[in-house]
Image 1 (cartoon, rainbow, N blue to C red):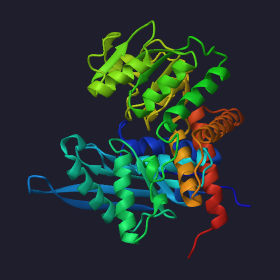
Image 2 (cartoon, rainbow, N blue to C red):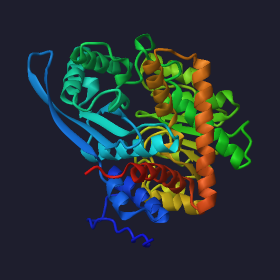
Image 3 (cartoon, one colour):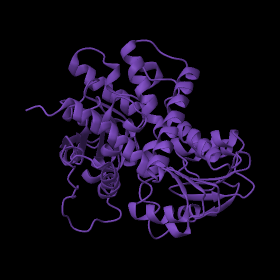
Length: 429
């Protein structure tokens, strides 16, 4: 058998640290090199299958016509239908969506569910749009990507600034074109429309589960362990609440308006009530005000970046004092920061493992829709726990076997699984 040729990444200009696709590819290249990945398979896995760019004309409430830009990227579907969220945000770019679609590919493979990776987005400020404008935007975007959508091809879910209502509009638009109700075309739907019990809390619950496993691995006590959570949205607030219930002390939380620190602990239920009533954490009285940047550098046992990507960089990584980082957000740590954290001995649970609870229960929802039979929340949570703990152990074993950190191990495990399917399926010509 011929020895595998050395993989040589395409020659490009020096990548920006903040470019999400380049950051993902740096991790991918490191893992592929260690796996001695076949150069042909390497080329396949480094290239997205489909990238859709679409114009979305929307009639606004004032009678004027606006045109928005939308994206949908299917990165790899060798293991099953593409799976990935749709985000509405002014900062959406093709690079970001492609990186997130790739992350979804590796995430699904890490937890060994039969999905590939996708992501979508619309460049807009959803907070400046009325409910009817959001609905028209969503339906027109759905119609423009209809060719790739479907339970057997591409299954969207909520993401940044989208929710159950947006998924309901997507499902209805798709169903109207198909002339029958198709519940399995999206996940993260309202329960009354075929959503799964436990889906809304699943990502945060998955973060909680892997944090507890990491504390046990490092032989740190659960009770009294200090936690800081950047991003008190759906993921961060759920993870904080569940860890508090386990006996950990949540000393800092934050959102886009800034953060709150209390060395004695923050009652997460009180913080959640405040956000429900006031929309943001700003003004929450039970602690001293800190910035999001200060939160990342607190002396804590566990840091959970659950907001946006690229918040831990080479500039602030030397100041991070946490023993464990559990990445609730996608891509919160840049590739250049990885090396610094590794040298400091920080135990980083990478995003493609730490926040995989959401896609795992999305898979459960898809299965339930196709079966027409629904599980109790207790069953959903137990099955989620089985998947998350088993996946954590698999990545940990890979880390020990190859003497690499958890991020590289997770990428190696995921790429190995996807590459194996490509080798078995072969190339259709």
